[in-house]
Length: 339
Image (cartoon, rainbow, N blue to C red; front, side, top):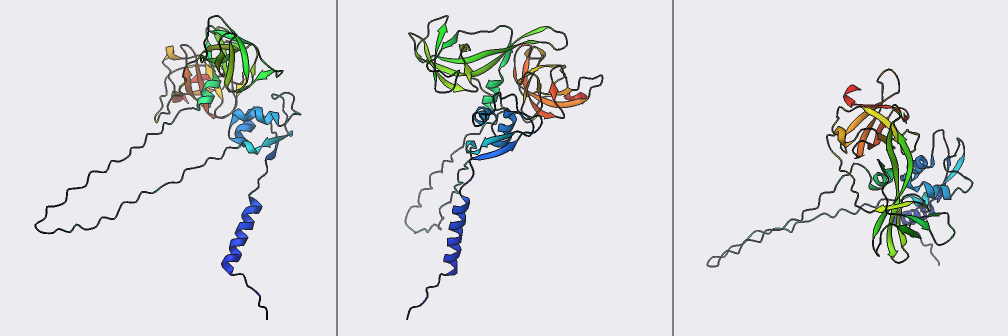
């Protein structure tokens, strides 16, 4: 006589868990996003993918968008969720101390020598930076005169612009050797003071880095690209850029000035957007300093809070910490004590 084999309850629940985990392990690679007023691909990449520098990848997944600066409310955009980088936290390993047994003494025998002291491992202190290094580099700077040592004049292939891992040929005003490193830069705009009309200099964008691979007919490899790099871009000597460290009690200097331009070239409206002001090292400013912005009106009405991330003699770059409304070119910069 055959008997039915019953599945035990623990085994049943284990099978359910396996089936459940398999059914939910797959996640969609794309997400439809509806554009709202004020959105840019930069904003959408930052909000959905936690990295604004992925906006060219989002644009690439939406070939119907001919101009990345022209998107409209209600437009559907495919967000490539596979670009999300999941942070994996290392497992914490608990140290266990060996059990100390009571010491047994026997007469007529010498006492045991004391154990050698245990050397404790000192973990290095993790540095906390004021701003991400890539954002600091891509923000660029305002300079009185454009300095370069050459330019990109040709490239293999038919692609209009260059990206990381591609090659280009450069013309230089001096000999170069294999292994030389350069920044790839581009003069974005001539900056004039929005109130006085005085010329402040040229805003330089840093597009990427390159290394010389062939010194005879100078050929470079694009080792990093923060945006797509066009032919005609300039190259300048490489130097290490270290972001400033975060400070616990930032200064609030008594400095007044104006916003003279922005990374978007028109306005800035969100946290971590970058603006440039007409005050710098000569005015006593340093990375980490906090200032306020005000509306362009007869009254000093607080509009936002900005923090200096880099300085030049007469200009500085700053990130927006708070913004009640869009911060525009020409907005006054005032000490926070006047808010």
